[in-house]
Amino acid sequence: MFDKAHPVLAMHHPTRHRGYTLLLTLLLLAIMAASVAALARTSLEAALEASDGERNLKRRWAALSAQQVLADLGPRILARRFAEYVATQDPSQAVHPIEEAPPSTIQDSVALGGLEIEFVFTDEQARFNFNRALLDADGDVHIAQRRLADSFARHLPGVLDGATVALRPLDEDLAFSLDLPRLPSPGSVFESNGPGSTTLITSGSEIEPDWASHLTTWGNGQLRLNLASDPALRILCEPMLAPDEIETLLDFRRETPAVTVLQLLRWLPLRAAQRAWLRQRLTDASSTFSLRMTIHDGQRRSERLGIIETDRTDGAVRYAAEWRP
Image 1: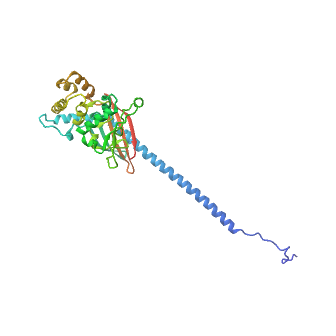
Image 2 (image 1 turned 30 degrees about the vertical axis):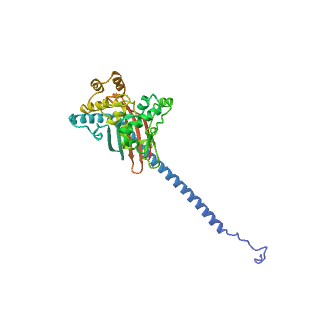
Image 3 (image 1 turned 60 degrees about the vertical axis):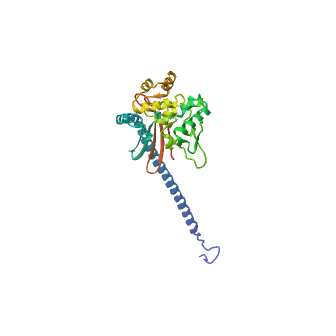
C-alpha cells in the first residue's frame, strides 16, 4: 500500500478556476447585451427612417396633388370671382380704395391625407413685373433702379421703408438657359438697410404686404388690365403717359371694370405710339400664376412655391421649390 502522507506518492486534485468561469460568463453576457443594444438601436433608426420617409412621402403626395388640382381650378375660380366683382360694381360710385380692387388672389386651407395645407393662389400678371422696368430701360440697371425708386416713393411709399432698390439681375445667357426672369426673386430687387430694417424675403417667399400685392418678378411682363391695382398701372404707364393721361385711363377703368385692352385704347385720346406701347404691355387674360403652400403635418411645417404657366387647356408647373422655415 502507498503511504498517503508521502509527498511524491500523494494524489493531486485539479485546481478549480471558479473566478475565471464567472468572468468568462460575464464577458459573454456583456457581448450579448451590446449586440442586442446595437440591434435595437439599428432597428429603431430604421423604424424612424421609415416613419420619416412615410411622412415625407405623404407630404409630397399631398403637395403635388393639391398643386395639380389648384393649377387647374385656380384660374377658373379667379375668373368666376372677377365676374361676380364686375356684377356688383356701381359705375357712379366714387373711387374704390386699393383694398376693394378686383380679386386676384385665392387664400384658403384644405385637409388632405391627414395634413393641413394653407395655400395662396395668385394671378402674377395682376402685379407690375420688375423685369418690365429692366426691359424699358434697355437693360440699364442704374436707369431702372432710379425709375423704380422714384415710382415707389410716389405710389408705394411703404415699399422703401427700411430698404432700397438694388437690382441684381442674372446674367442674360444664364437667364435664357434657365428659362427664368432676369430678376428671379424679390431678393434680386430689394436690399435691406441696417439691422433694424424689415426682412423682405425669407426662403424665397415674399412676406412684405406693402408691396407683395402690387409687384412681382414672375410672368412675361404684361399687366392684367382688369385686375391690376392703381399703383401697379401707374408704375407701368409712367415711362410713356403723362400723369393726366394715366388718371384718365384709371377713371375709365373704374367706370367700366370689364373693359378690354382694345376698347380702352380705342377710347383713350392717345397718340399712335402710345397705343402701340400699351398694347405690348397690357393684357386681358393671364397666363402666369403662383401657388404658395404651407403644409402642416402635426410635427413639422414646410413651405412650397410653384409658378404655373397656363394655356387654353390646362396649367403646367414651370418652377417649384420647397423648404422648411
